Each structure stands twice: as structure tokens, then as C-alpha cells.
Length: 285
Ligand SMILES: Nc1ncnc2c1ncn2[C@@H]1O[C@H](COP(=O)(O)OP(=O)(O)OP(=O)(O)O)[C@@H](O)[C@H]1O
Image (cartoon, helix red, strand yellow):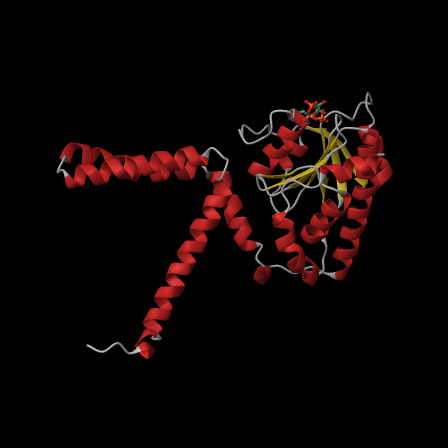
């Protein structure tokens, strides 16, 4: 039989190629989403169960095979219940694809004002080592965390943010939650992460920032009281020791209205994980 190269370019082969690429992309996304979370242990457990199932099937061990079948069938329901928040977050991610979203000019201006206020507060607090924890609500509602805080419902300004976090004042402990471009509450309690990827030298403020990013799509900014360093967390990722340039770039990409801006910086944004802390120290002097 002769090999004719043009036979390779059939619709069927193209469909197969697309099929493989889609599966590969979904697997890659799932694995990078669960990296460093408790889901990795779960995945290992699932692989072990499937291996036992395969071996029992090959060796004709009927009872073991039956038990594994039951475990797999019921396990799916259990996983859906346990990972309900993560599944919800994943679906919300899908809903946020550009195809479904639109933003207006007015919204863009408000977002720019929000970023300027955050920047003013971060700069002030970082230089003076004032600890701060600010969470920005995105698409997932933060109602249950808002309920733990003290109501403010105030316009976001740099001055107010600074004032809230001045040590030994009634509102400084806990997190500020920003909703719909307003400071909704201060002194809110956020869930603490149990991730073992958080560096040991970071305390509960940083752990709370990672915690909220694991269960919602909120963007959380931390200013460290000890070092003045700036961290942002989102979707379980920590971006540590960010310089001013880096956090502004990130916030603009995630919040600003211009679709050009966001798509242009998206790659850069995801490549930031540990910023140039040295630069931060320089800025502080
Ligand atoms: N679950 C939480 N929710 C909201 N805020 C919290 C939570 N846990 C701690 N905090 C805040 O963090 C402060 C304690 O910070 P701690 O020194 O333990 O953290 P850290 O990560 O080492 O930060 P820093 O570098 O600023 O010291 C508390 O006073 C409180 O304001």
C-alpha cells in the first residue's frame, strides 16, 4: 500500500487532532488548578482505586472488582458534594469567558479610581509597615464573609483604607471587603488556608488571603506588617513580593475595562509568581 501524504489531511484526522488538543488542554488546566491543594491527594487516591480495579479485572478477582465498582460509582457523588465550591468556581470561570461578558466605559473609570485608591493606600502602608488585608469581590458573592465584618458602605479612597488599617484602632484587625467598588465592611474574618505550599515565614494574614482565594474568585491584597512586602492572591495562587509596577499591571489586567489591556497583559500576569522584592525594599527607603 502506498503512503499518500494528502490522505493525512482528512476531516476525520483534523477532528481527532482537535479532540486530543481539547482533552490535553482541559487536563493541563485541571492539573494546574489543583496543584498544591488537597485535591492532589484525592487524585492520587482515585488513581490507586482505578489501578486496583484494573488489576482485579485482569486477575479475575470478582469481589475486589465489585467493591471497586461500588467505590467508583458512589465516589463520584461524594466528590461532587465535597468539591461543590471548586466546581461552582470552575463553572463561573467558564461563564466569565469574553463571549459572555461586557463592560462599559463608566465601569472602566470607576475601576481606575479603585486601582488608584488601592495604589495610594498600598504605597503608604508598605513604606510604613502597616499590615493590611483587602479583598475585592469579583463574581463569586462574598456575603458570608461580609457578615463577619463591621458595615461601612463607603466610597473607596486611599485615605480611608489607610485609616482603617492604622494599628490599635477598632477596625484594623481583619479584612476590608470591597464590593461593587465600595468598601462594604472592615474587620471581616476570612477562611484560613491549609495549603502546605505557603512559606513558613508567612503568618495568618497571608494564610487568610490564600484561604479566600481558594474558595472564591476574589482578588486579595496583603501588605505585610513585618516586611512591607505586597502580596496578591487569586484562585489559590500567591504572587509574593510584588513591586508597584507588578501589582498595578496585575490589577489593571484583572479589573480595568479595556479588553485590549486585559488580553495584552494576561500572559505577563500569569507569569508573575514571586516579584522582585528587592525593588520593593528600594522603594521603601
Ligand atoms: N482569618 C483572618 N481573617 C482576617 N484577618 C486575619 C485573619 N487571620 C489573621 N488576620 C489578620 O492578620 C493579623 C495577624 O497577622 P500575622 O502577623 O499573624 O500575619 P502575617 O501573615 O505574618 O502578616 P504580617 O507580615 O503582616 O505580620 C491579625 O491581627 C488580623 O488583622
